[in-house]
Length: 347
Image 1: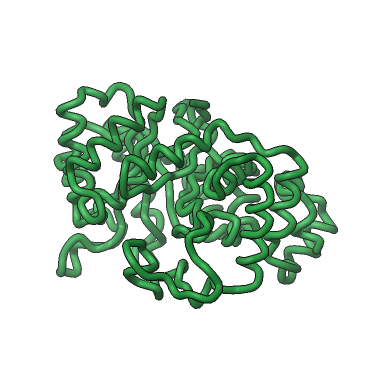
Image 2: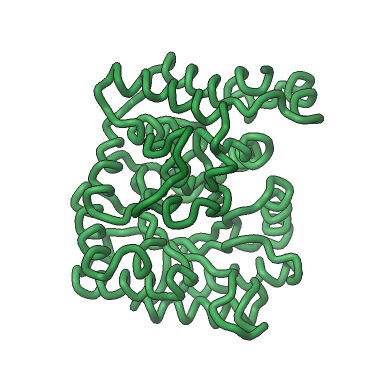
C-alpha cells in the first residue's frame, strides 16, 4: 500500500487509514479485531480513533488488539479529545485540566505509553487557544504525543492555530481531519488551500458520504434496513432530505459511467477521487464488517485518469464560489487554489 507523510512531518502513514467509530457500537470486539488484522495484513498502518467513540470502548478494543497482536511498532496510532466523556462540566473542552485527564485516560484504554497523533476533535470557543496549544506542546515535549492535529475546524481557525504555534515555538499541527467527499467539498474554499500553503496533511473522513456514494440509496425511496440512514434517515450532514438533490444524482450518474466502463464499484471510484485530491495524507475508511473493509481496501489499486478526475470534479462542483473567493483567486492566482483545478472555482 502506498504511504504518504502526515503533512510536513516525518511520520509516514498508509494512504488508506482505518477509522474505528463503529468499534463498540456497530461492530463488536471480535469483528473489530478481525478488521484490524485484515487492515495490517493489507499493508495499512494508520489507525484513527477518539475518546468519545462508544464512550471509550473503541479505544479499549484497539488496546486489547494491540496487546494480543504485538503490532504497536507497526502502526501509527491516532486519537482525539474535546467532547464530553461524562455528565459534568469538567469532562469536556480543550482546557488544560480536561486534556491532561483525557490523554491519560486514552493512553490507559489503549494500553500504550504514547500516541503518534493527538487531535483536537473541534474548536472550543470557551477556552483560550493559547492554553490548548501550550498544553499540547507539553504533551509532545513529555513524549506522550508524537504529532498534533485538529478536526472539524474552519480555515481561519486553522491558520490562527498555526500562527500562534509559530509565534511561541509550540508544536505545530501537522494534520487536519475534515469531512471531504464528492458530495461535500466545502473545505476547498479555505481549509484545503490553507493546508496546501502551510504543509498540513488532510485526513478526510466520510469519503463515501455516509454510504451515499456507494449507490445504495435511490431518488424515490427513503432508506430503510440495516444501514446508517436506514436506522436514522435524518442523520446529521448525511441526512436523506439534505442529500436527496439533483446534484447528488448527477454525481452518482457520472460515477456510474466510470464504474461501468472500468468494471468496478461506485465506492472504489469515490475513494480513488478523494485519494487523488491535493494535500491528502490518508483517507479514513469506516466499516461495519471485514467484507466492507476488504471492498474499500481494494480501491487502493484504482487510479483515475486525468479525464475521469476532471469529469467528476466538474460534475460535483458546488457552483460559483461566494464572494470574495472567486474574485481573490482570479486576482491573485493563489498557488494553493491553482492546485485544486479551475473548473469548480470559475463555474
